[in-house]
Length: 115
Image (cartoon, helix red, strand yellow):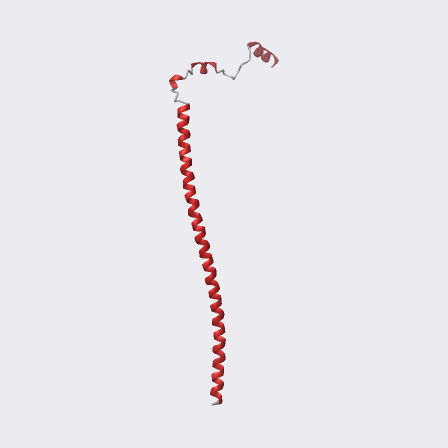
C-alpha cells in the first residue's frame, strides 16, 4: 500500500510538472497570437494606405494626361501648322559657305612662297 501511494505521488508530481510545461507553452502561444493579430492589423493598415496611394496615382496620371492634351491643343492654337512650301529655303542654301578654304589668292601665293 505504501509503494502504491509513493507511485501515485510520483505520478502526481510528473503530471504537475507537465501541467507547468503546458501552461508555459500556452502562454507562448497566446503571445504569438497577439503578435500575429498586431501584424495582421498593420498589414491591413498598409494595404489600405496602398489602395489610397494607388487611387491618388491614378488621379495624378489622369490629370497629367489632361494637362498634356491641353498643352498640345494650346500649342496647336498658338502655332498653326506651317507647310514646307510656305518657307523660303532658297536663300538659306545660297548663303551657306564652303568653309574649307576661304583664303584669298594673295594668301595662297604667300603660303606657296614660304613653303
